[in-house]
Image (cartoon, rainbow, N blue to C red; front, top):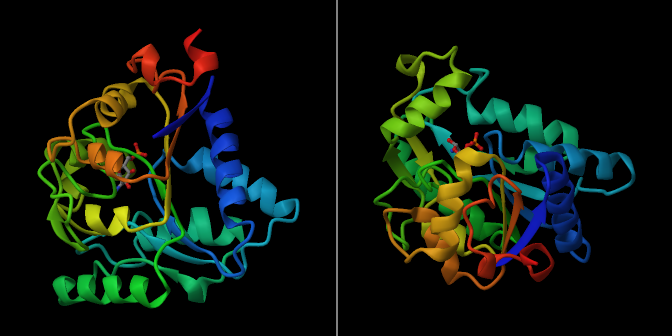
Length: 252
Ligand code: GLP
């Protein structure tokens, strides 16, 4: 895995935005995989500045990683709402080309199969943007997720429910218990992956993802199987990596 470092989260966002811009530069209609959560926010901010400066993403398609099950689409914390607010609008994407799993569908399992078909129909994801959970989840692929898992309904880990309660007035009881998420196998099908992580709370998950064994206990460790993964980290998120994992100039 390629690792790029910045002293702080804003700088990590700038670096990740440069990775995204380079990745889509030669593509007429790039297909992006987009993540929610706080991790990618500095990236979206930096990318928004690039769009204001002339980067045109209006022909890009986007597929969100995941969505809560059972939350109305128009709930402010549904990922439909979050993606519209934080990604589609600011980046100037065409809403008709932005897809989010249908967690509110009457039959979420059927919606999962439809989502896989939609990604395949778009020609697959060119660049997948990822955050990482403190327990090493990617998307909502919690510990126990298989490397060949596909889009499916999952139960959220207690740690994730607690972490995400900050988006629900601090009340864990309001956080949905299940979600529809792209699988690890779905994510690994992307042609390129950029993961952004910042803050001390992600340091252990990052170190295990990079240096630990590939294990379902730490789903992000399966990213080691992909040959085009860039991790963009701030100093705190990189703080538990061994010097051997760091870029040469940082390890000195
Ligand atoms: C969330 C999302 C993930 C995200 C992760 C980390 O629950 N489903 O896609 O990467 O957990 O969240 P955050 O970036 O807010 O720390």
